[in-house]
Length: 268
Image 1 (cartoon, helix red, strand yellow):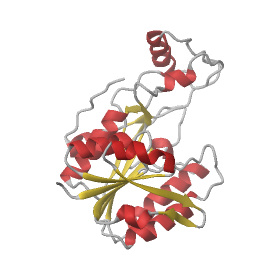
Image 2 (cartoon, rainbow, N blue to C red):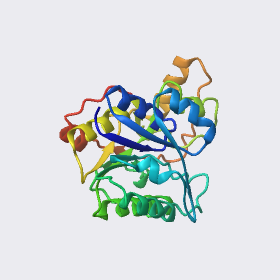
Image 3 (cartoon, helix red, strand yellow):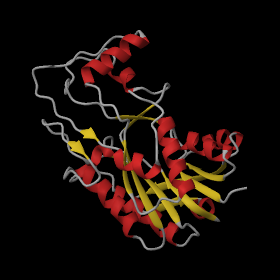
Image 4 (cartoon, rainbow, N blue to C red):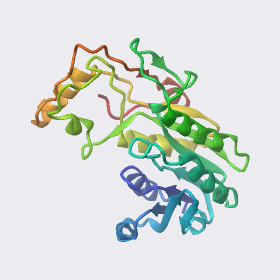
């Protein structure tokens, strides 16, 4: 058996990641916010723990979940679009207090390329590009820095673009909608399989103290791409408003490709 590894947040990405880790002989502690999900975690041979973040502290079995784990993957979406007033920074500060008193030596923190602004010039975004001053981005970057500056462990920040897989494609959400913005903007997406393989590579090669953008290397035009995907799925195509100037960005993942010697599995 490899060392134990902890996955905080066994949702749509975290559950599949835990399954891959187990296939690679890791023993996985996984958290869920719901007791009803415990049977499915057990069935997948994930050792389950109920953990909830709150404005007053971390509720549930957090210390047991972290117990004897030297590597931790933090995969807790901030949910700031649905609840922009939630105190994500305070919640994660409480989580950090528990990590500091654990055996954890290495952390992969799952972040987002939404920390970068869109612009009419479609700038190429690297890890050195300035981050946004929007409320959501400021909260996410603040949490990234809390992890990076903590001396109790080493952290690699992974900024993923929009996640998708066959069971969850953004084209399905856009299907049939009208008056959509940014028709000519570049698409920045990454398949869940690539997300998992990238995390695995970081853990297996001990690549820490990094910030990495992670997005598929191809960036088709939004209108063209989503129209083609909807046609392929035989669902109504979305309609875009071409009269409004498009804003967007191109996420550059060359640093990740170079350091991990990584080849993306899924191209757009």
